[in-house]
Amino acid sequence: MNENAVPAGLKAEILAEAMPYIRRFHGKTIVIKYGGNAMTDDRLKSSFAHDVVLLKLVGLNPVVVHGGGPQIEQLLARIGKKGEFIQGMRVTDEETMSIVEMVLAGQVNKEIVELINHAGGKAVGLTGQDGGLIRARKMMLADKDRPGEQIDIGQVGEIESIDPGVIQTLTGSGFIPVIAPIGSGRSGETYNINADLVAGKIAEVLKAEKLVLLTNTPGVLDKNGQLLTGLSARQIDDLFADGTISGGMLPKISSALDAARGGVNSVHIVDGRVDHCLLLEIMTDHGVGTMIRSH
Image (tube, rainbow, N blue to C red; front, side, top):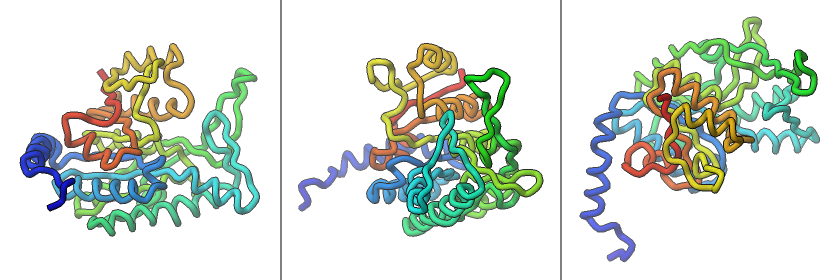
């Protein structure tokens, strides 16, 4: 007999704990931003794919949005080009855009689709160009050193509108959409868009029950490094003001807050380095991150 086997009573308890969550979220949409270590560590990749498939099998509608920063950097380095960032946004000239598109749509997206299919799901890869999903316009950044001036960062887009038709068609037919954050302009231009922003806006438009953002931190931490398990919009404003939330967490929290204010019931910033973090956050009493509410 396996000494590490989970006792039958505990197994039953774990399953029973999930029941009310399965009942409450049946038929509801969960948008998941997939990124960080969960995208590069083989064990975490496998546990992510199995979680997504299980959520679908018990009646939820998972929608996956992914980034691909490290993979883009690797390919840029191979051709001798260095990535440049201004205010956290990748400067994207024409050559960089073709690489972003190649990596996100051609490599990363297909890897995730294959992972989910291998775990027993039916995933379909999309970019924001498919079915007119993401209409974008050129993003200009305010110049902090020269008030009133703007910085051109190339083919970086901000979202103008989302047409969820293609996602709804897929989820309604039993498929799991996997979306790369590339959008189209009115004249057919291609734009690179921050994946956190895409996930937040898609969650809003789909009126999702939850938005889950996977990160490489335990969640939102206070000044002493302690995990804040629940935050309201007002508390977040205070954390912005006193500098507790800064750096790479800024766009994540901004996107999370916009989604919460836009009607998404709850937003979770989750430690993607924890095995089966999605199931733990969505289906158990003790989550593994920070939950953000709009009120």
